[in-house]
Image (cartoon, rainbow, N blue to C red; front, side):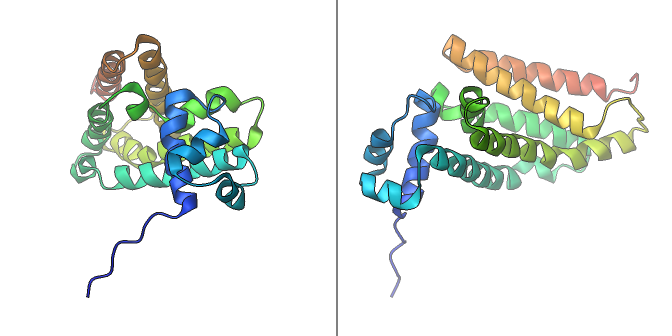
Amino acid sequence: MLKAAAKPNAKLKLLQAALSLIRAKGYSATTVDELCAAAGVTKGAFFHHFKSKDELGVAAAEHWSETTGALFAEAPYHDHADPLDRILGYVAFRKVLLQGGVPEFTCLVGTMVQETYETTPAIRDACDRSISGHAETLEADIEAAMRDRGMSPDWTAQSLALHTQVVLQGAFILAKAKGGAQIAADSIDHLARYLELLFSPEN
């Protein structure tokens, strides 16, 4: 007899609610009461799992990293033989993810760190780990593309990987300012053109 799929526990429900609400409203404007209502749990359940909203913020950043990490690990761009094609495939995949409303495609940790970088160091550091950790997944392909093309530039694979995140996070900010994905899509296209030029034989 097949067992029914396990229902998400209260902690997971709260983390999933945090991903949605914080991207829509921002960290400061999201209350514990709203998180509990969205998750369908009691405030007692909230404080059973988290000592404070800030503790949930750190956990939400970690949950975001796990969730998105799994998505990117299985993305099709890894199948390309040429490491540059994998890098460009990653950028193209980021553009494909610009679906739905602004809260649905923007970055949880990018949203939180803008609000908490000075006031809540624990959340700031969790967001840094998330963004920097994601950038690290690009470094091996960048290094391989540099080797394949005999490049010895005055920049590093790490700095270029982080630059991709600078462009993407800035694109999300502009998408919020303009109320739609088109500016983010345009920025991602510019990033792809920049990478193609950077690795062209003339450079």
